[in-house]
Image (tube, rainbow, N blue to C red; front, side):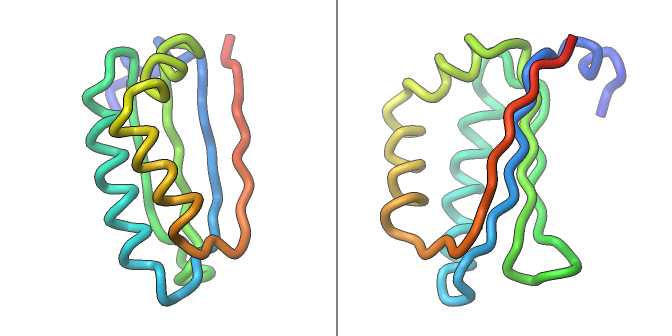
Length: 104
């Protein structure tokens, strides 16, 4: 990541999810769509997604934003809401945690 962009980050979303093995591919597809939307959104500085080496069904997602307002704007977009609904209601996520950080 470009260090200049890193200095602009003031809001970080960090998530760790464990997905049912039968839903892993659909989860990855939904995240790929969400990532494309997030990266195109004003105020998004980075978006990382990867499966962990410790557990093939657990992933890490980290997003860096200029501020909380940028995240709120992005979450209000209908395609994003539909994608998140798919993740929450249609896939079997067997565990997870999301943490939000304000960076000063």
